[in-house]
Length: 464
Image (cartoon, rainbow, N blue to C red; front, side, top):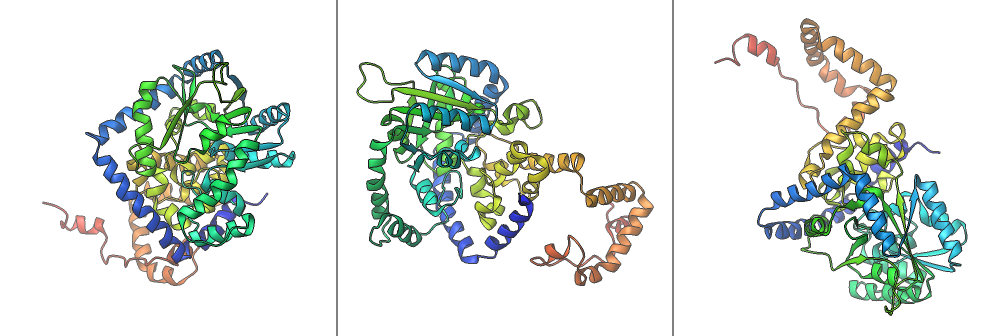
């Protein structure tokens, strides 16, 4: 397997050097900022709403076992069937078994980042099952053979001209630069897919313990068709998506819409209670829910990291992150991009191989300020860096940190080191010093002051 860090550094360098693409992303996000701030202004008190949303998730996650037990009992009472998966491999096997039992020939799927996490599409296709993404952005990315660029706006990096060429190539439609026409092309193509599909696969934004319902929020209506028309509905969700009651959703749903897309509410907010009943004209005959752990209970067991499970996948942290805006979503090489992805991916996929994502941050704190459920994201990035240095330090970490501790704990030596650094700084700018030369490619190192702060203080410049 290739080293994720090397691939990340290579892809990030390519994307960050593409000035037109970066400008395109910034322009797209500019419209989001305007709409988001307009909707935030409609709240009587946005910060109090954030407090309420944070508390709803805090209480749900801190009583996760009881909430899951209550949800499961109510969900199965409604006629659904719950399947528990310890990891990605078990989740894939459960879904493959359900698909085989359904005798599926065609599968339609709405946007579900948890399915990306377990690489579900690859597993289905390897077994000979055709699966079509019904979300427009995901459908475009599927045709491009790329993962989602952003977990709310999957193809935000693709211009309409490129989409037109893609549809011409794969669907045989005439070129057009009209967004409405491009949408209708995809709609006409996908409509028959819903009718032909034997199995519909969805995610779940929330699991409501009080009622045993899953809540799905969307803007296209494709998830409704995916859940309602096929004979079998399979939903896949992480165990952390549970909330205690419908009252909690009264704040979480509008917060998700405002923070994620700058909307007062998303267009479609649907609660699914179970398979269709005898007196109902439509709906699936079977309704299965796969609940995925995949290291989530390990995060739950760590009081310092636990609040990363509060994430409602709104994408607000990606939208404000200067790193995401410069390197793009594909460079991360993982399911969840941006700050929240950099926080949770090392826990989901291994701190040793994926801690470089926690280093891809300016630590500006914009992500923490934007998070509607108040996850302390930039401090979590620091925690990951600290844990990596403790658990799997590189030779550079060992030498540098021990040397730094030795020098800084001895005032005289620290002062002498400062004088030496100021004296050799002009030379450092010219020599290929490890770890500094790459940094200096895009930055100017400031001139060192003639006199150190410590010396100025001794002379009385900082007193009185």
